[in-house]
Image (cartoon, rainbow, N blue to C red):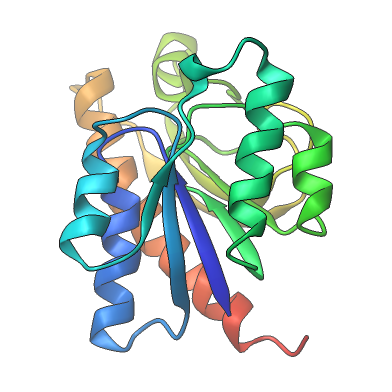
Length: 189
């Protein structure tokens, strides 16, 4: 299974995937890693691993639609079986998702459908939940919607801050993403 991974930040989920591929735990080919802005640590991580990288800078386009089309075309050039949104903080269009047969995997630091959006961890703490977690799902044109592939719960501790809870969720999220990709790679077409 060929994947293209999209990142916006540090790429800790990406690093988990890279490490799992290198160790033989995950049988996928990372065809490329792309970012929506230059100078992300995620791109640096992939460069260090010898993986081809690209940037389709959101700020270089006059409209979101132009950026979305450029990103779609760049990702399509790698012929991925699955596109992985790994901390990619941009919403892509339905046309983008459809270009890959709906095979666009997203991770989210909450138990969807609860707490969608960019602040899932903060929102969970503010609401006062005792359990949150992470979700891996097939993305669709909505914000953190689409069929759920896998979820895992994480207990919210009384002393948790947004940062400490998010760090514990990220540990689970990395493992869940690697396992989900392994399951997808092993599944018959």
